[in-house]
Image 1 (cartoon, rainbow, N blue to C red):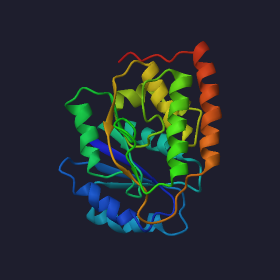
Image 2 (tube, helix red, strand yellow):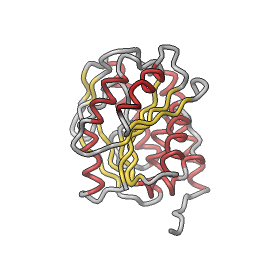
Image 3 (cartoon, rainbow, N blue to C red):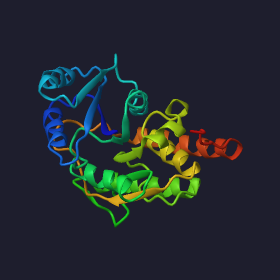
Image 4 (cartoon, helix red, strand yellow):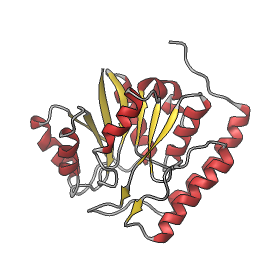
Length: 244
């Protein structure tokens, strides 16, 4: 069984070639699944140009912007139909250091974790080049999520993660309701409810080198209201693991 990293893209032509090359050069092999939401800047075309020389590279094209969560759900469904033991999430803009993929993988393969999170906040605040307002918004959001849900995870909104395939299979991503950045929270919350071992690996998060950020205050607002609804629903309905 092998490893997969899912990378959603929208207008990432400035980064996509270099991120693919960086992942391909890692000492632990990863297949790469790019999920592109019909980027008008030609991101998907660049991926197609690289595919003949990168047999580890795959592409899913969607007709338009349908939300980060829906992109990952499509990627998880694709991955579960194939023989991947570990399935990772990573941004395309180098805010996540590709070399840290190996550390997340190692936490699962050799450290016994079912879900490893690349955490900005487990050892202080390790964020580079973000405005202070955005750092505060992200940190306070994680505090709020911990208070509402009861999870002990410091970086509840993190999007840099490595899952054992069993975790994703039992979460059943098609049942996840939140579609924006709240998706990241709901996936962690469901894994936590299911009793999986979750560890946070400290990383340094560096704001994108090129291209335009997709983050906004409204995205965080949607996530915060969604977390409250998610917690209320969880009081009456608990997830369960499938029998293998």
